[in-house]
Image: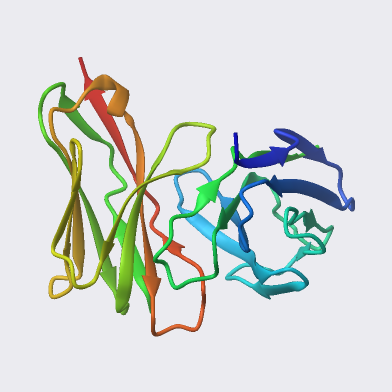
Amino acid sequence: DGGITQSPKYLFRKEGQNVTLSCEQNLNHDAMYWYRQDPGQGLRLIYYSQIVNDFQKGDIAEGYSVSREKKESFPLTVTSAQKNPTAFYLCASSPSPGQGHQPQHFGDGTRLSIL
Amino acid sequence: SQKIEQNSEALNIQEGKTATLTCNYTNYSPAYLQWYRQDPGRGPVFLLLIRENEKEKRKERLKVTFDTTLKQSLFHITASQPADSATYLCALASMDTGRRALTFGSGTRLQVQP
């Protein structure tokens, strides 16, 4: 079955530590996205990528970094510069980087907490 | 500033009734509006998409309306069931920002009582 796989499901970060969240898709989609969701809030866009080797900042990119070396993979690194990283992180993809005429497919998220 | 507003209070209804959820927006000219369902601890799942030149879209027990004059979308679930209990998110795609990504509302939690 095609879909998006996020790992790990739960992740703990120590102070001053960088952590990387994995996102892999086998849908052959060009566009991929990272969102952050805080309790009772909507999804906020961190970064998105329209094509391999290209990515753009979203609304809350500070303290995060991404790479897109392969079409299938879009890992997110939460750096020590992100002072409030505790949240639910969601990865999504869509067939092409359109202007919203295509649905996004989501993974089941990674919950990141501070130790 | 641009804003998408969904009712933050949970909507509680009896099984069999019609649930109506609201999505209001300001300072957007959305070309498309999408609705998603999210269960606790899971990623959102796409339900319906409606274009700016469409007034209404239906899919089984779901119906979405889009009023660009009122800047509002309504999401209806008819003959609601306890299994419909979830958080429902609306998302906009605007042609007048260069950004090729959706902007999401904060969602409304629906609770259907048996």
